[in-house]
Image (cartoon, rainbow, N blue to C red; front, side, top):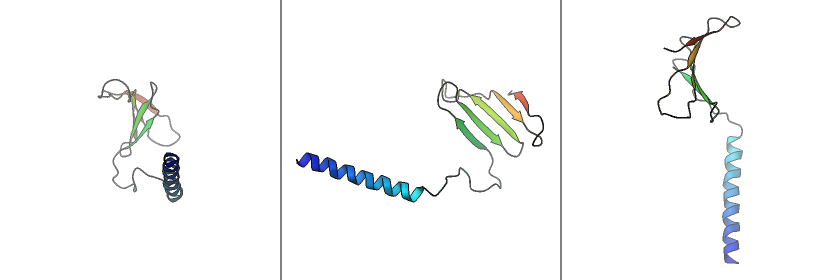
Amino acid sequence: MVKVWEWTRNSLALLGVLSIGLWLGSSRTVNASGSDAGMGVQFQLAGVNEASSLLVYQPETRTVYVYQGATLGSSNVQCTYKFQMTRPGEVIQRIPCP
């Protein structure tokens, strides 16, 4: 009976802590960077499997670099290709990385 009471108490404490955390954090969004001035590069990891890719955006040059298979194989990942953007609505060029 003592063991059941300990499990119940611990479970209720865990649920209470998780509920408080969910309640406190539910109205806030998390941003990787807080300002647009001088932020350097931005990145996004899309998927964690064979088809995963790491996208790196460099605002100064308006270029998106794509690293395919970023979560597989070697710890060194080569850039697969990049997208060069000039103006919204125009053609985006896909260029192989050097």
